[in-house]
Length: 380
Image (cartoon, rainbow, N blue to C red; front, side, top):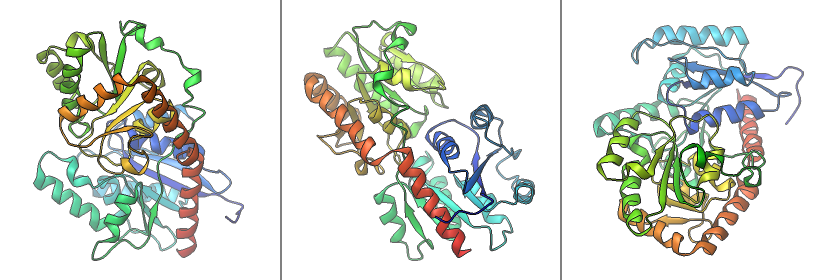
């Protein structure tokens, strides 16, 4: 990459709502871009939330854009235009349908390229199938008009390239984490005592946004089955979200509330991961979840559903275990199997961290993103 005297300003645009994997990705990218070439500005939309708070805390420049409602688009587009002019932006990188819509309606000069990041096939993210289909088609409309599309799995790359009118350029860039930050040797299990979990307990856990698509209903039922044969087991769920109250009630209804810990929002998930003996990803719709990568880096034995691009980062039987069928029964069977083979589980955890070290680091991810930026700016 050629060095220029002035780095290009990159606007990272995202609705600031529930803080999850996409938001952690944005912060990870913004903190690690090479400032000789690219200068990040985080642009949260609609809410003064955790993305804005953490960006400010980390010393990242922030430009908040208010949106009084989902249909109040044009004032937000005008505000985005002001931000582009203020920073003399060299690139816009958007994350999600609303941010894609703002960038799509912006009258961009040809010298201002636009990248969309697509983590999954978003139609499955909606309980209402009609709304899911409409959102999916609308998002695809903007994807075809952007200068480039960033996808996070080979599965997604193949999907978009099969379109009758595919995107102009498609970049497969896997997510990455910093293995030094998620180093299991740096953490013990302080969170166990904090949540009333005995030190010698078997802890099954997960982390993520408490939302329908994460499949935590299945995990609660799977844990109930496991608890019947392992009465000393606990379930630790790290995260917050719109389904938190309902899931808490479900745990009580299932008779497992006394052994289920809901941490609520945690700014640092690493102590929670350190407290777990097994990490379960129960998602019914997914891309490549950051929480899963973080658990892999922490050497946690992984049990996961086979959704999205997870099979592109985890080898079944070597680096983790897939529940091959949807529903709680297969999750419970996979959990029971790993509990019954502790040495195999430990070996899988070590292999998972090795996979991160080899292929899925922040450094590799940022290098590929910067190559993408460089190539589309050369074409602009």
